[in-house]
Length: 144
Image (cartoon, rainbow, N blue to C red; front, side, top):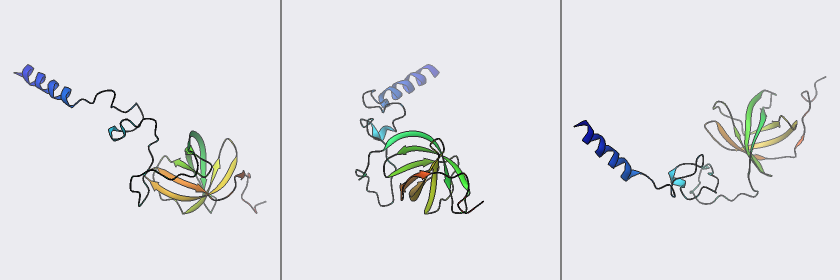
């Protein structure tokens, strides 16, 4: 009796299986994006209708250690996962609310850039660069 149930279960699983040509590549998203493995999976923004994003610059995948610098010089560790000439996607170890404007230090390059928060979902946030990238100073401005 158990064998016939098991055989029918496997037959049902075989009918529900997605052909490999339609399945997404490993790490390329879920089955909703099948056939679009070469396109990046973009986060949705408020008011997004699901259409193509109008980016002003090409986004490059990266993995750079960074720090968010708040107005009181409190820092929060993060990772830059995508970057372009106009902005970046930051990923944090925990979810919390970010202010509308802050600065981001790229640790290895020791540079700082002012940014504006565009979107935030869970532990990820998208930012737009609002000023030039400059060398990061060792101390707060105005301190001895």
